[in-house]
Image (cartoon, rainbow, N blue to C red; front, side, top):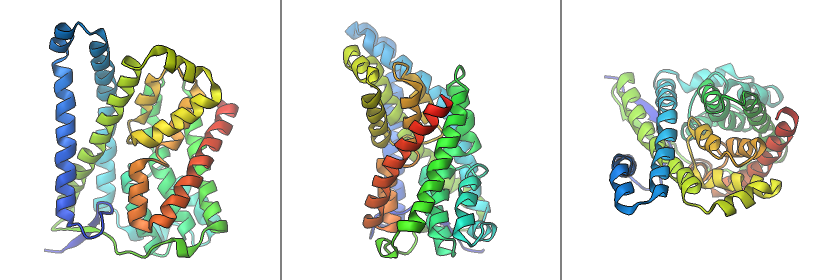
Length: 337
């Protein structure tokens, strides 16, 4: 039976791949189970403590998780199908070789190729290895998790009263991807990149690859969804209202707070719109900042980029992307919102 190489994402240097995958799956499964247990025990907790905040936390958390979960499953399914059935050579052949043309083409390709940000990093590494200009690979890495159909539909569902958020997210994220691609072509340095072999999983068939990829990605991104929903619910239900209102009332403070929150929470792009929609005291522009920064710069992405391209690259790229992402969101927010 033919052996196939499948990328699941970079692992720590020297760590056995099966150990990394097993640990990740177990930890996220435990996290999901523990938090769902809290939701199921909400009546008991509310009655025993008399705490209305506990009940409010569970209600908000459940609402966000139930709304986001179908989009997460659909996104992971399509992402796994792309990983299993679409060879990397397809992307390399489809993109123009000239940087001036390949950057916007790669950015636009994110519109038709769904995938989460975790999968976009190894795909970008594979594209660069296949001879695609690094600037184009980076543009695809930023656009794919931010403007694909699943994310845009999820954003529309999360903001039913504000359909302009879909257009604003699409334009700001695409602008960010193209700008960062061109910035790399102008200012990037090959010495910032660390040559490194790709981490692969060998499986016996494409269907086996699909199942393995789906399982890994669902547990991985599901854990981040639960964490993000829990954090957002905690902010809404437990944080003092006066502090939240004070931050939200200041335009620049709210923008910075939402940008930093996106970095820390590291929510999957298929689900982050529901978390942003729950922050009703913040302006649409500051929530747009959250939606643009999150799929481009967060803690897990910095770790993945460090492993794939090297720490020197990740630090520089994440820092510049963070600033440019805020700028793109503010510009498009001013124009569209």
